[in-house]
Length: 367
Image 1 (cartoon, rainbow, N blue to C red):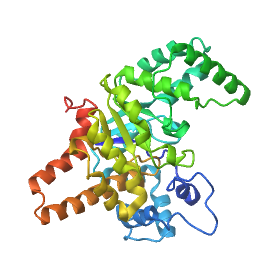
Image 2 (spheres, one colour):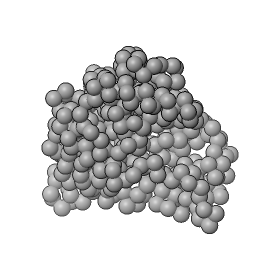
Image 3 (tube, rainbow, N blue to C red):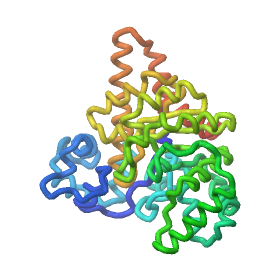
């Protein structure tokens, strides 16, 4: 179960577009380099090329020509099918017009898909629909309840929009109204609706806590919109403590290079979980080390699998393949040495790959 993922591409991508989608940089790629000369680029040509009917390590030109020949729908079908992922929890709050929605993803993969709703996207939609500052608190709560009626989880990008060094307490409605007034004025002046006010970000988070669904929080590595030193999950410690009494689970996503810090938080707080999703694809052949570090401290019932794939189905496929390989190599060494029992190692693989997500997202009663 891929507990945090986005849709595969809807449309064809030429070389320039595809290279921009296999890096977290949002800057133009310099003309003297290619993203295919990276851990992820090498992994794509090693592991995805055979799925498309090419020899391993096909050169970029041959790989891209084959991709074009097959077309996006067939590339999606092959790579999603070969991933072995049995269930997707799809976060739909980012550039949904470019990627498959839950229904499209289910059709392309032949697998069940449930939705995870981004808090900030709902807040921005409320403003686009028209609202006054005084109306915003109640309107957001009502809209969030309706928008998440069939969702299995929530997601926050407070790490991108502010960082984790925010005031951890719940803001009062009069604070939210004042912040909303400033934000609405900014939206009117700039023509852009993008929430970054820390009071409003906290408000959305606490409304998510009240909603009671598991909340995913991007942590660590991401595009240049993040300031990485402010995305260390340890900065969430006071917020985590404040949330504990409400019984809402918090899931720290990706966490690289702070995976050991996330493991600590998952060990000491019963409502905290984590994964190393995004870091697996981008570290390629070195992802074994990242996966091994994720197994150091946290109880195995607190670790989940995700790919965080967005766009190219190569990322969905590799996220699963590299995770399986890293787990097999790590646990294989431990069982070969006699440190671990094989049966218990297989149990841990099942827990992290599937069982923990079913429990946290309350999917255990489904077929």
